[in-house]
Length: 390
Ligand SMILES: [Fe+2]
Image (tube, rainbow, N blue to C red; front, side):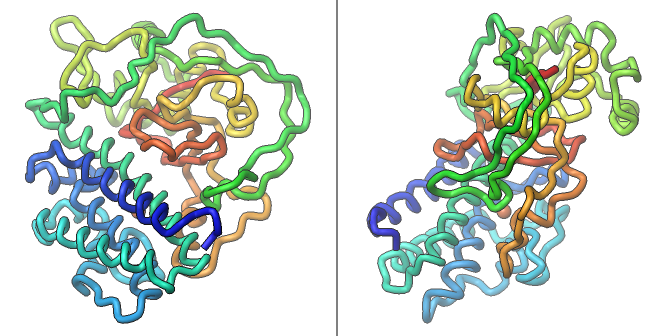
């Protein structure tokens, strides 16, 4: 164990992160835990089980002698994408499982948590396992953000538009007087080289050459996005990638996700229920195609991830995941780890685009300016926004 971190610090950190996932689910009705309206949105109970399975499979089973798995069948249900670990329920079928029940999954969490606490206090905790523990905790935090976005999708696609809870998670930041920040051409460095945890895809700090560029110090607002919509942005092919234009036509796309035109007003579903769109808030829930089309309409562009990272110390970020114009690729020298954890990031480095920053749904203590989030270009259920560059 690293000398400055005590066992009781580890147990506290483990307990508080695990508890936060359950707090996110506390306002749900039992029925809300089960449904999977689209393939990308997993049932909340699946997130609760899968994050628990991660600790059981990667930490307790291989490292804690005499540990008995809670239920040997859970491996099939809660393995997400680890080929190394074996067969699993296909992702589209997660919402068809009425069993294990929600109460069984909470029992599973308690069982694994009790054993994890005993393990953390035992002599079996080595430095290698400690780094797996850190990965497991950061993994749980990633699923906490997914829990929020998936709950929003489940409730926001219910015709009753039920509120998730009364208190808002939105920081409701008003955007005022944006301006462009200039950077001169030159050699810069990007990538993680700090203390503490980062994901493997951030490693390999390296030099990049950037041409002169300018980047906005604020995000694009709903007001600006409405102007794009009203100017016919969704019906003018010239702003769209070919794939994006196909997506617009196939989906009859006309607005960000969760927006509804009701009695002459633009409303949107929020976790507090349907509300009028606030023109001064950052636009949210747009995909890469829409972000690019908006930038083209403004006669600007999206920043690359290197530009974003270099500039990020000069502006505030953290309310929206910001689409970049960078493909999700390995940094120079990227190495996949041996074993199942090598499947964590590397195998997704094809056909996805990098998002930088963090969002109102990102759990506390889970943001870095070197963090590389990534999604397919058509997806818009995360809290995504736009920062312009030129
Ligand atoms: Fe996962």
